[in-house]
Image (cartoon, rainbow, N blue to C red):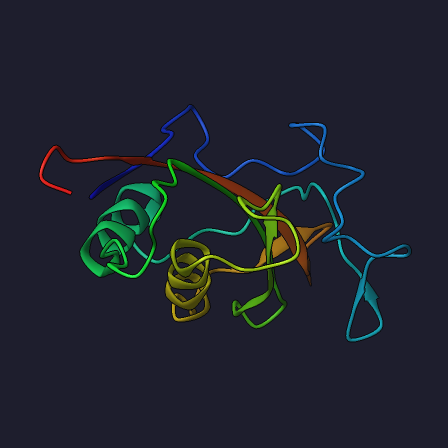
Length: 144
């Protein structure tokens, strides 16, 4: 399987921009370590090397799990970049099989949890936790 990430003007988009406010992944109030998680920041978090490097790193690490019987073509994921630049609270939006985590979703979660050292988001010069949303499209190969 080959993985493709939607590349837009901004690869990572806050869940507010995509209308994900009612996601089961977001608690009310949305707090991380007692600090309110922002949906937008004056300066959004940035992956080391930028969006292109993030795409390269995800593609390098992703292998379609052989144990997954059904083809899964999309994974919508949210996560929080904390004030130290670490990925936290990875959550699958709209799971492929509600109530369970598929091997593909588990692989995506594992990859994202290993992608730390982000530049944290900032508002008014202060580091803040920011919720990010990443839609991932998986393009099936013919040899599967």
